[in-house]
Picture 1 (cartoon, one colour):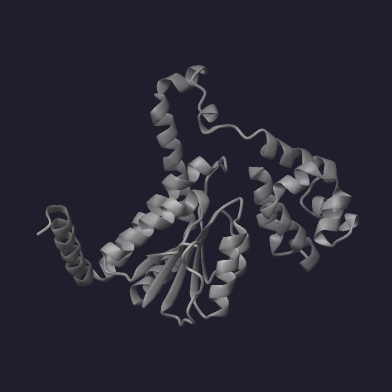
Picture 2 (cartoon, rainbow, N blue to C red):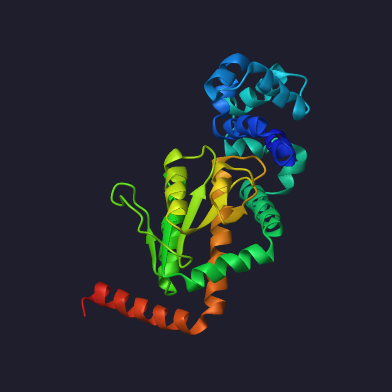
Length: 278
């Protein structure tokens, strides 16, 4: 499936509007391709079976059945993380299990860091430094990422808040000083995409942190930050994203050292008062 993602990314810009529709559906709902014939997939998309077949040929597959087999292997036979680090092989015994896993994370972090341009990184930090308000959204397994980033930005003086779908009903109309940070990873949450669409309509700047340059959030993001994880397991995502978020917060702190220092003093005073009831 990793090869399939790469094929879609490489071909995407040259696809027709109809073929892009098929590509987006594949990324959003791979189970539909795994469980259904080409005709039914086409019907659910409102395109012909011929269009589905043409999409397969464009990516270099002999036909739908070959693409479907690859998707099925991904959907129905995903390995758990520790299955990727077999200690039974002689060459693996040179590294303890925990070291194998951490070296694998290191590889993913290094690859992601090289894929994020300095220009994009600086643009993201500038928007956050200048922001009047920052709203951060992450649902399901990305909620912990959104929660940590909200706290980290608040600690250096950024007016950030965590989006809570059970509490937050509306976005106010914004400006370039209103920023929405969205975490959107496969399987892409429709609630997240709807929030981004509404924020876009209201004039917010959107920073999308995702797993592909052609992920659905790319349609709304002003700044897109794709992370790389070689096996595409959800458990691989967190180390990479947290490393990037640390770099982002550090970059903002360097641009605003005095504001960061003053706010950290205030945060510490507040913490002491709450702890010792001063």
